[in-house]
Image (cartoon, rainbow, N blue to C red; front, side, top):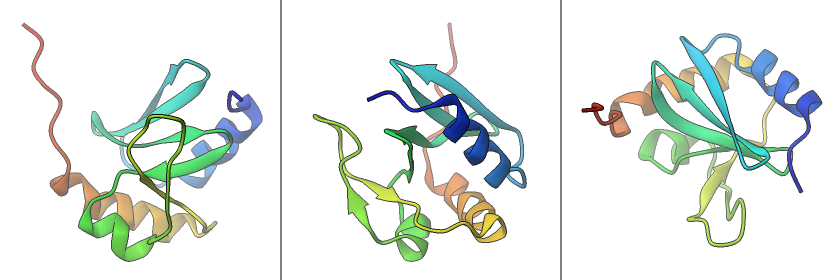
Length: 101
């Protein structure tokens, strides 16, 4: 089931403190980026973060966001400051985007 535009707007408001926040629609779901780094996504109207030490410490609930995907961490909080600080701590632990040739 694709994620709704209403839920996307809710998440974007929740993440308003995340620097350089962007999103990209992909097959009815949304990939989320900060400073050009992929940190999570919205799948079936649920917010997930990539599994790195900083995110696991804050959000330990692991789920598979869609069939065939690697497990990600479900964000089960509405504390925008806590989520933003977790994402800031995650960024150094995530791979940088590859340079296009």
